[in-house]
Length: 254
Image (cartoon, rainbow, N blue to C red; front, side, top):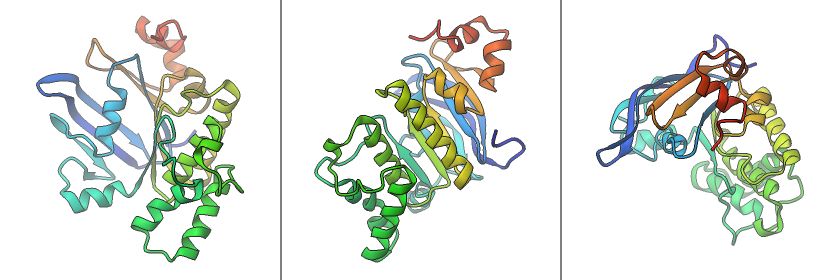
């Protein structure tokens, strides 16, 4: 398992998030260590994806702070925030590919915008990233010609384009069959192991969390905060909170 005793990659401090005056989550405090696979879990509507958007700088919190390797993304001004965000790779549920562009053109977009590389070097990087996610030879395909699992991997290749230190996944197994989901888990773990990437995953997929998760936090809508944290296997077997054990044994999924 990665991350034990490692440096702190992300630190969330006394974070309050919500919309208008409505508080969705409060007093969020947790750390994500360098090189670990960290899951954010919880029932429907508890704020998992909203928390992700705060962590990657897309939403402003009501109060509190989020530190990325010691630097506040909340307080960062435009240029500094963009610099921090370039260290992120983010993948969304459907892959979020541009349907009018080929797979290779989708992966090339961040490189064309931020890298300053010449076209031949960009093409070489695109090939490398596609091979990394098991899509060698698919660069000329349109997204509509790919399966759901392949579209997710193409989205991952684009997220990896700028060699990010942090990878964020929003429900990576959503819509995948069990075999494709297990393949994706293996790919995520190999990226962590081979590249040393820190991985943050929003999910309610218990198979994935027990297969590759180092640590989790579990959010609860009614408690408006974190109700469990730690090794998911230990929480499932030993938590003194019946609701946590129920959730982690599938009975509590909504």
